[in-house]
Length: 166
Image 1: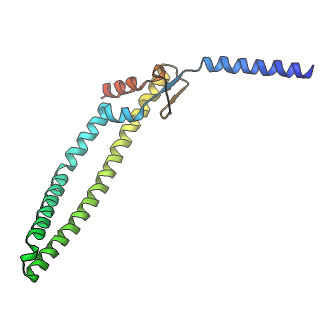
Image 2: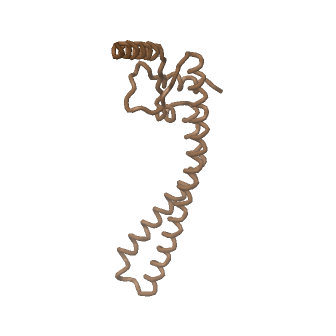
């Protein structure tokens, strides 16, 4: 008698949880797509490219100079005098150190600015997700998933909301 009562309670709880789960509205947002396609993300990327364009061009120029110096040393080094070759090798090494320092600083500055821009976009995206969730009565919205059925994917709505916002 106790076993049958316990079984009935278990079935009732199982039935209630299935009913509650069936009424739960779940959504999914592909954060990577939002960060690539949403208008604020695209504008942020354009700002970064413009902001770092001159430094990138300078690094490319120095890289070309280094390559040219290295080719010159390889081609003419054996026929140069010792002092001339040492001077050119020293100049090459100094320029190479300067290039590596500037390249490291460039990467650090770019990463810092990218993180600032992406944090701003992510904040806007999270506000949009919350707004959609409240307006459409979602119980939970996931941003990371191994698999999400396209039926619950609201990424396009989030991108549109972000793109429509001023």
